[in-house]
Length: 193
Image 1 (cartoon, rainbow, N blue to C red):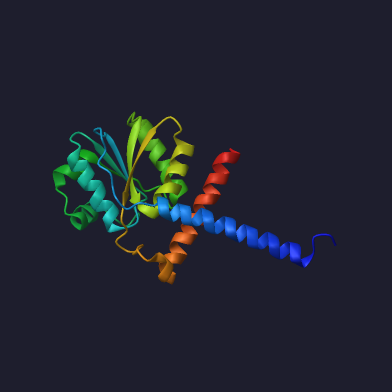
Image 2: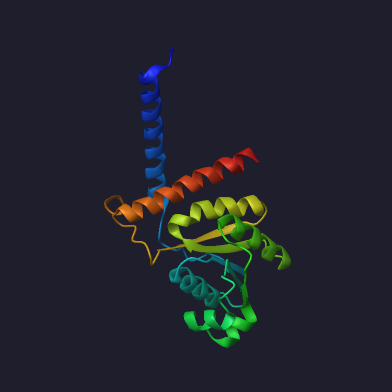
């Protein structure tokens, strides 16, 4: 057996080093600072998940008069009124400018749902609002569905997961490591297509 146990351990060690290097780069690139879009946006998409995403998305909507907002992946039990009350929005804003997407159950579903919404509204650029650690994978999936649409990342800090000191917090490490693995899988799938 030319490869042997030593060869297996060497290969596993090299793969682990490669994974760690890529993961640390990913964590360095993940940024909670939401940029202020340099241009006005007409389409805004919130990928559901945390209250911070909703707050940031609605704030962005209010800053962009005439824009339209999609909240993608809304649970079927959540009504417009529930969402309005939970986020403190006016009835007028909800009626004029907010669409609730109920198709998506995951990030791939968010991308599909967003592509349908963007096409039906003739949007060629969208501001994407999601947690900072979720943004890289979200953009990969959205670009797979909408290669011709300009995507403006609007990452927000998670209000349910503290990322500072993630290496000391087992829960935070598991969440971001899992997200990184999903991101790598999304990249590979996108390249194969």
